Image (cartoon, rainbow, N blue to C red; front, side, top):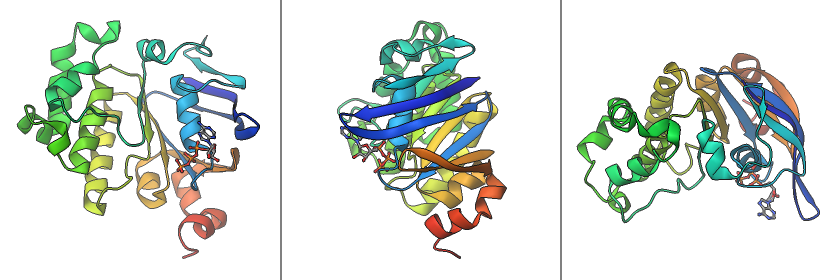
Length: 235
Ligand code: ATP
C-alpha cells in the first residue's frame, strides 16, 4: 500500500498542500480532482521526492520513504509521469523508453517490459526509431507513460495525463492506463478532466487550496453536488 500521511508542502510562506492523508493499493486507480493551483502537482512531486515535505510522510509497504531523493524513490517502485511529459525530443522512442529502465529492479527484465509497453501502445512499436520531437502530443504522452512503465513501478503517478490532448486521444490514453492497472500497478492520477478520470478510477478526492474537501467512490463523486458545481458546470 502507498500511504500519504499528513502530507504538507510549503513553498516559502505559501502552504500548497495542507495535511493530506489517503492511501492507494496496488491495482487500484485513485484520482485527485482540483482546480488550477489547488496543489495537485505538489502532492505527486512530494510522493516522488522531487519536492521536500514540510511535514508528514510517505509510506510504501510499511517503509517510510520521506527524505529519500527522487532517483531512489524510483528504485522503491514509484514512477512519476510529470505534467509536460518530460520526454527527450532529440532521442528516439526506444531510447526514451530505455532511459526509464535504470532502477536495479527493472534492468534484468528490460526487454520483456518493453514488449509489454509495445503491447499496450502498439503505436510506439511502429515508431520505435522515430525522434520524439516529431511526434504528436498524444504519442509523446504514450512515450512518457511507457518510459515510466519501464522502471517496473508498483505505483504510477500521473500528472494531468489528459492535458492538451484531443478528446478521442484522451479516451485512448485512459483505456491504455486501464490496461496498465490490470497488470497490478496502482494508479494515482491528478486531473482537471473530471468526467473521464472518474470514469476510469475507483475512488477520488477533491482538493481545494491544498486540503481534501471531499472523497468517495467515482460514482458518488460524479453525483456529488459540489463536484458538479465546481467541475461539471452544475449540470
Ligand atoms: P496546476 O493544475 O495549475 O498545475 P496544481 O493543482 O497542480 O495546479 P500545484 O502546481 O501543486 O497546483 O501548485 C499549488 C500552489 O503552489 C500554487 O499556488 C502554485 O503557484 C504554488 N507553487 C507550486 N510550485 C511552486 C514553487 N516551486 N514555488 C513557489 N510556489 C509554487
